[in-house]
Structures are given as C-alpha cells and as structure tokens.
Image 1 (cartoon, one colour):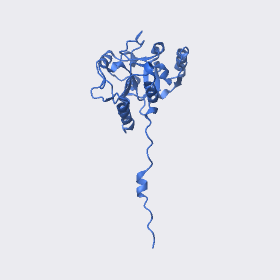
Image 2 (cartoon, helix red, strand yellow):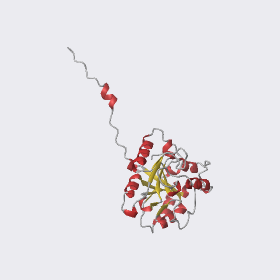
Image 3 (cartoon, one colour):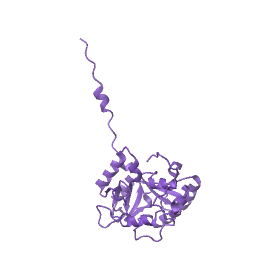
Image 4 (tube, helix red, strand yellow):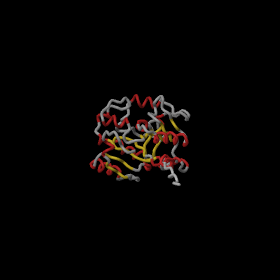
Length: 243
C-alpha cells in the first residue's frame, strides 16, 4: 500500500515569522536653513516656537505666519494648555510632503515666501533617532526631555490623532510604520516639548560637498560634532526614499 505524501500546503501558508518592529531605529528629521545653524549651536539645540529661551529668532523662517499662528492656537490632546508651538517638530521621512513642496516649488500655505525661493542646497537636515529621544526622555532630572508626541498627520490638523504618552506615541508610530500606504508617514510628525539638545543630533545631511565644508566650518567650535553627510537623494523630489 502506497503511503500518501505529507501535505506541504499548511507549511507553505504559514511562512516565516515577521521580525519585531524596532521603532527605536526610526529616524527623525528636522529641516532648517543653513543660516539658522549657528543660532541653533548658540542656543544649545532646537527651540520650540513658543519657548521663552529664544535670544534671537531664526535668521530664515520657512514657516508662514498663518501656519505659526495656527500651531500656537492648536492644543495638544492629553496635555494641559500646551499647544503645538510648544514642541520642536520633526518629520518621519526625508521626503516629507512639506519638504517636497519646497523642492518642487509647490504652493503650500504652511510655507513662508522665503522657503520656495531658496535653493535645495540652502537647507540642512538634522537627523536623530527615536531611540535617542527615548533615552533622553528617561534621562536624569532636569536634563530629561519633556513630553514626546507622535502625530499621524500635520500636528495642527483638525483630524490628526496624537499620542502623548510613551504607550500611545509608540502605538501611533508602529501603526504608521506598518501601514502599506506610506502617505501618512509623509505627513506625520514627532514632537519634542520645549527643546531638543543638539547633542542628540547624529547626522547633519547636506546636498553637496561645498555645503558639507561650510557646515563643518560652522561646527568646528561646537562641543558636539555629528557626522556631516552628503546625501543628494534627500534634496531632490523623489517618489521613493528610504526612511
């Protein structure tokens, strides 16, 4: 009697187990004009728009006045009288929609007139990671970061959902990273309350070698000198960019 062959159907339908999503590896990106870099170093880091620590406002403001006003009047759910303007904003993709609109000179009410008129090499992208933020948030005493929030869209958007606790912010981030449609990730933000120390920046991304040399000169006197990397794909409009 011939024995029936073992079925392989069940095995083939199971497939390999998915690796756990390490959200700590998620990069975060803060776009600024190169003329603002010296002021950032002087302040010791990035300051929220509503911070009282400003000695001088940015040399080049890429946010429009209406957008700043909207963010100053939009409360963050789960906080007490804290607005979006009390947070330093980061993108979750180097190809975020608002940055792409600058690169393509596309009209965007969130942008000042200075932004579209600038060249791509006029900007630098300060890069860090979620892991750096989480570690700094749990740091000692007054050195620890304040609230860290993650949004699934423009932080001042009416329908945007926000996670403001470690649990809810991680949940929002995991949902964004797991989505098959990357559009939400291009609109999402990670927000750090009040200030983001420059020492948490791991990379300063620039458009070309000439800008890299200028940035290295600016950083020469800084106590923290992150890697200055030329990465042209981040400075050109593109349909697909690794995040």
